[in-house]
View 1 (cartoon, rainbow, N blue to C red):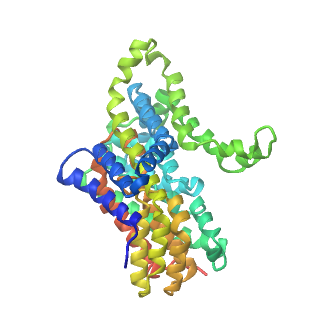
View 2: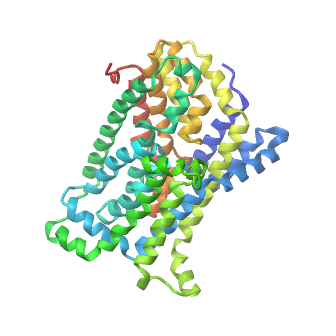
View 3: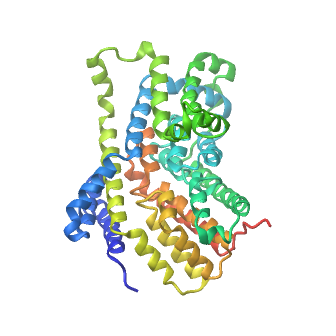
Length: 453
């Protein structure tokens, strides 16, 4: 089986990053820059054009700016002590449950996943509250970032989501799969992934010996509310962007001539959540924040390391993904998958591995757009039920949020937690990417039933 240039470029890109970090023992930022340059070399005479196009794509990517805003937001709510007041209220509610914040993050990610359909948006909105809460209640920073990033995939493994509709929009899929059947089957599969994630939280709680907060250290809810009710205002920074972009209010606003559907569609949850929360934090904590330029400079100096690490990694991750796209990676992977002529269990495994690999530098939406149709046709041709095949593809692609080094939710979660993203890579692969991929394979082979009718 002959591999195309772009597939070799992808394999070399991944190997270089792993070797630079694990063997050479240098930092991940250098690895991403090196991978970016080496990947462009596969373009031959077009290498300089690929470098430029990739860099522009990465430098203007929405998630890059969103991640920077989240670093600033996390720094502000921590330094102003506003998050302490909110956590005091939350602890009064579920602080007596060992590992409570992690369970809340997991369940809330599933609920929000049904609304947003976005991995990055899921981590951004839910993690903005739950990650600092975990950090303050005994969780290691890297573990709280791992849990939040690992839960990002529920934005794709629960219906409805954009990846689901992109898949349904393909003629081969729509001819064999109805929206209703896919919705129900994907919801059942999503429940499997939720149960698995809850088990992982339970395991992390036991492994790290995370204890319930002693009752004598907890305020009653009424007392906690009186002390810090202002902190609840930061939820406005989450609720407003969600209501404006999703649901009945969004539809109503889109119908108004003076606003329009295009204007509503241009509002980004992952940009506006940290911006609004930061503004609210400054207003609520006005007495404690700096007032002069010099004071602000000193105040923000401690956040520069997080800005530089996350910024470099995301910039060159997105840049490399654009180069791979221009090298025709989606098309070459499509040809590779369509050439498979093996038993259904083996085909499902190989298709799953390929989708997970592609979803490492790309988003789930881009992955489904690029190879979803070919993957579907390959699975169906191998004898797998069309609805099952569609669900398996979505479960496989849902690993994008937890797939290092390119998963944007990893860096959003690490930025909020102020954790080293590199320390989340192995746990994410071991506890989320591989097991969720295995769940997708079990669904594809129907060892995990998802068909209710």
